[in-house]
Amino acid sequence: MRSLSIADLWLILGAIRWTVALALTALVIGSVIALGIAVARTSRHAWLRVVARIYVELVQGTPLLGVLFLLYFGVPMLMGIQIDAFTAATIAFSLSAGAFLGEIWRGSVESVSKGQWEAAACVGLRRWHVMRHVVWPQAARVALAPTVSYLVQLIKNTSLAALVGLVELTRSGQIVAGSTLAHLPVFCGVALCYFAICYPLARLALSLEGRMHVARAH
Amino acid sequence: MSLVRIESVEKHFGDNHVLRGVSTEVAKGDIVALVGRSGSGKSTLLRCVNGLETIGSGRIVVDGVDVHAPSTDLALLRQRVGMVFQSFNLFPHLSASANVTLAPVLTKKITRDEAPALARQMLERVGLGQKLDAMPSQLSGGQQQRVAIARALAMSPQLMLFDEATSALDPELVGEVLRVMEDLAREGMTMMVVTHEMAFARRVASEVLFMNQGRIWERGTPERMFGAPQTPEFQQFVQSVV
Image 1 (cartoon, chains in turn blue, cyan):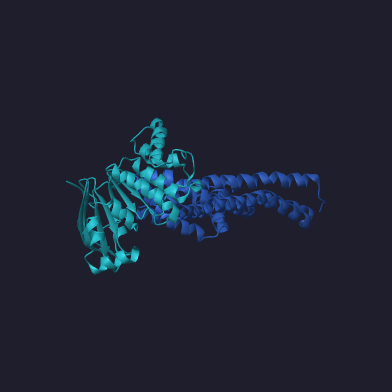
Image 2 (cartoon, rainbow over the protein chains, first blue to last red):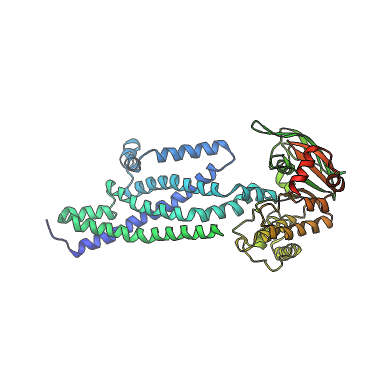
């Protein structure tokens, strides 16, 4: 056992970059998947809606940690290739973000009133133009606040990646606490780091939501 | 030749038989007022004319196009048939000008460079030349509805459909919208107007259709209809709304 040192602080602060990198990568890749899911779920073609729904239900019905373990421990057994912890976590979190964001965005598209679709159709716009110029811009405003809220969840959930050995924020705390046994101050510090990242985002989501309500009240 | 031909149209909403063998014709330049109690089928009939609603049987032909034929390109048809809704349905994220020019630009009726001039021309036509850059949320109900009319006119439609265009407005704002509609009528626009404004129907319409229980119950010129209503149902209706 040794006492806490400044090096421990640097280890923990340095690990933030992996937490942020994982959350942002998953957000970007997840958004691409989510866009596809939202489009497919609101499509006129039944088979697209079915495929997207199966994806969403599969992802939402399985624990993220289970998927992460499957990718990190299961895939090598099956295919004989080892994926590193960051890649495995990125894939798992992207798949998850794709499903959850996809559902948020689908709901946003569906929140645009029927009157808007009809008005756009009645000036002779084709479906693609209706979506692109009338429905999506309005849905995006609705989606913004819950999307930021989801990002907060995503950042906190990246701590699961500690369990496959990715030295992100939580794992770095475990390492420091393991060698110093100073669990209380270390994990208080780790929690503070999460809070410092998430709190501004949560406030942002709240204020975006407030602005939405003001805009709608008019 | 008539611009709109409606032949024996039947329509159900589930068990509700909303249109029962409706037939009529609208000639170019006609102003047809559709009146009747709520639930009589007048709005549904109007929505069938531009294909917003499907029909069970019968046929509707607009400007030579069979609206409900599977091969019909509804978007193309609707570029020639304007519609104005009770709830305005302006695009809330776009300025008055952009509401007006969105469809003409996207359907390549005009170029992007021509858009500002068209927006000005159309909004001046409905008395809103000062509100080019206003957002819908900054406009009164009457102004919003006039922008909606300008938006429809920007596509130079052959036919305009008005679905209770003044029903959602505060009483003091009804007049400004009716005046715009009267101007249009005077310019020779063909119009089908679902309305509760009997004075407007009487003054402007070339024909009044009274709908009841999904049928055209009584029809005629406004002078005849309001001067000497024939069926007891229409007599009652006239008494109840005047």
